[in-house]
Length: 599
Image 1 (spheres, one colour):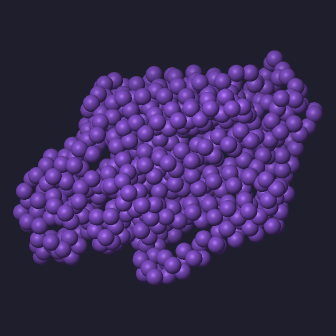
Image 2 (tube, rainbow, N blue to C red):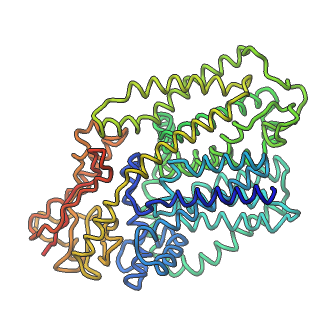
Image 3 (cartoon, rainbow, N blue to C red):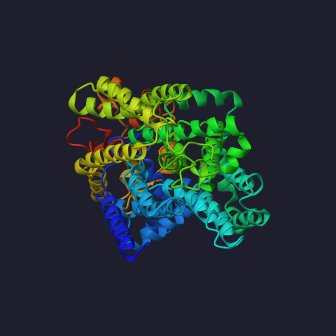
């Protein structure tokens, strides 16, 4: 890179980073799965408690302290330095997203070009679904950053067979310490390292040993310093949060796979649906070549980035299926970075005999029997593949547009399902025509334009209309409470974030037969506290207005919170009506309720 091009790239990154932090304390995206958004309060609880109450665990709720120790420690440093607020809480995830983008830029520049790296980074940086999690105070983006760092460090050889694999192992440990849910990545990482060393022979036994040493050099001290003294908490955490996962049987895996095919987790949103189509197209090319040239030959010809991505998608998807999490957005987002790399590989593909072709992966110049220019007519195999891609593209694009259709219906009382279906069929046909192996041409440009336009549209809707109703409600709670006052209820941890109130985990049941309130007296420990009343989901109009797949969630939440909504034997004084309706153009109000003072 010349000095001028370096300056332009830095300027582009600076502008993009600045835009990504606009209204960082605003309400979540209207396309966001509403069942996730309260998790910010839960994951911030222990770090916030350390700042405000001088203890990571002032109560029995230790989800973040036990399950996300690195995230909790870093968040404590941030909150201690900048104060407890939504902006400070979300800044760590945003910084992790920035580092992820920088690594993506460097990885793609290694195998392709600076121009391709810039285009890919802009596409990733404007990706609406990734901004979901970058502007969300949970450990997830930190896990994605460390996941990408493993690949970045492993592929940074520079003559050293030990240092960089060692650091890659450290990065994997950091992902696990950021959140124990990163355990879903462990089988994939083992397959990747062993396969790269022995099957593909890209690395050797020394690299594999260094990688393992990097894992142990972090995990052993952590086990001695943190797990040992708090073994009872970890045992309780694994029992309470892992029991039902461990009880999943193999019989449930086919149902998980069928459900994922219908509603594929994070890939059921607009731009991730496009990403899924591209990754599937890459997969078709991989399978096709595996049949013609052999699986081992095809695996050896993959670039390290492609092999890593393939291992991550197959291995992590299998692990998610075994734990019953293959359809959960915040779990399947771990598949987005590897799917993005495969999509980039597919878009930058050239005929392998083309002297301009990349030397990496399926696009590399490994054989000379391929034609340098595509034929004018599609061959029968290409027509069959185009038909299959048309069907899959239309299906997943329509699934991605379902959230758009629901938002339009709720906002303007207009049913957009038919126009979205027609658009999906037409766009799916165009994509299929561009993606068949016999076609090259404008594939990359067409997809890049479509991808960026979709994301910029969604981002504009979000940033231009987002209000700050959650922050405003949280500050009103602060005005109605004193330092350390207990607050409980479904929204308590979230709404208490910009106050000095002490939120208490809301799960528990009242002994209605005797009329006693043992749960509150034991856990709240006060004769006076604040209570956030039950959620009301009539904000979706009727259940037909609820997002796809959410009707069961709505009903389960109603049943779960009934104990808090019917505290008849306690005297309650209403203090504040809570209505989190973040978008002025929409009648959708995600949460409604009342804040009471309970005597």
